[in-house]
Length: 261
Image (cartoon, rainbow, N blue to C red; front, side, top):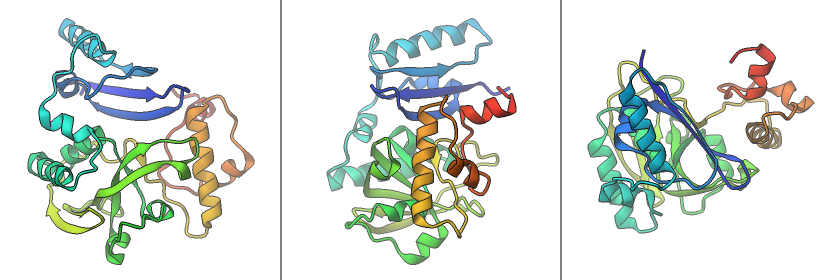
């Protein structure tokens, strides 16, 4: 059985700001990318004493008791990418280092990038980003999240470096990159035999075509509400639409309904 590590980070008000599941061995070996002063939850899998010792070190790094051994390029990649030269360096590093799309997605997630569908991306109306129409139809997007709000509509993103990755309806090795607001280049990044990093921590919920934008916005808001308040009961509106919306995350309320753990 492959050992997995689940990491959940919360802000000062107890709102979930990061939720990802990764392979435990590589994550414990490299350590957390930054310490976290707020509430967090981590699920380990232990089968030997060495795992326990590594987990202790990881936790000490997470809370700042031990230094995080990061290389210069890793520090650059978690800082704000306001400088065009720095964005180009990060792009070059990610493309040259990723052995496959799992590795690419994992690296980008560690830098704050999240997945979203084109229809959600369009709601932010970035004045300094122009995506070609054919790319809007073909790709899903990884964009760097700067701030998570109570309402997804108020989230903040950095559109100056985004990656188009085709996962739906079929996975494809070709990705496209938009740099500094314009189309930059396409790359071929191999697809792993058994992709594992595709749909974790994603905003790629897919709405039915007959759901209007006002309904979609309300649904996103309520979904964020239930993610942050596990004991809150679903509204009639949410119950009406949840079976029609694809790729919904499993919420604690769903687990209670089914009796699963």
